[in-house]
Length: 269
Image (cartoon, rainbow, N blue to C red; front, side, top):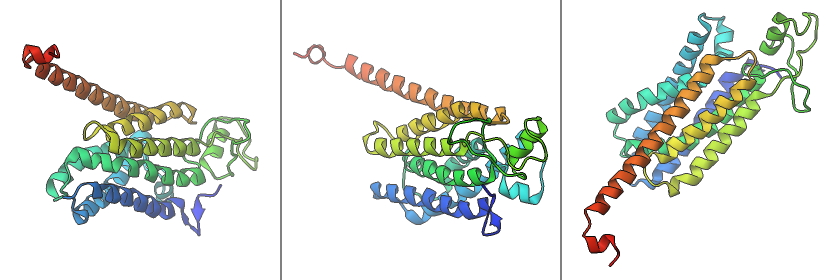
């Protein structure tokens, strides 16, 4: 694995592809809403992309407590929960400022599959750079990394390998695991979108699946990143809480309407 593609950091090459699919999917799905204005939606999505990258970098800095070299900061050090949290904070403001033509909850539903596919694409950068790998393992699919890679450096510092070793010990290809989880969550979101009971349900279910899977997979990360894992857990639990509240409110409203029906209607006579 090599962190450079055509001499450039993998992040710079992979990011445009991730932005392309992460923008194209919401734009195509927004066609379900006749009042949608694609120019405003495109501007919103591109702005959210920049905000997500900035949030991911700030979250990484908060976790590490220090800045690395320019190449290190460009090539690694982006934490997904920071990007998601930044998007969730900025999206309502941008939606209010731009004439999107789509209700906010419906906008989030359209964005969910794109987020999943874009994240799967970005994991190619993680895989090549070795920035999000797992514990050493002996499975056939585990991957060794070269001398200058993060897995090699971590294993050398912890005394697992000698500085003279040519490669690191094979490690869990955690980016591939994350990639599969993102694609599954995106697939479920696409399936649920036309079947959802209310606007926003697709996005909430996506968050539960995506962040729940990420929380579980973080146990394989080496070295551990507790701030990243706790961020995913917070997002997943928050989405679960909103789903439960909406479900309970729906039942309460249905029950209240039922109690106000004439007695013969309630009894089916």
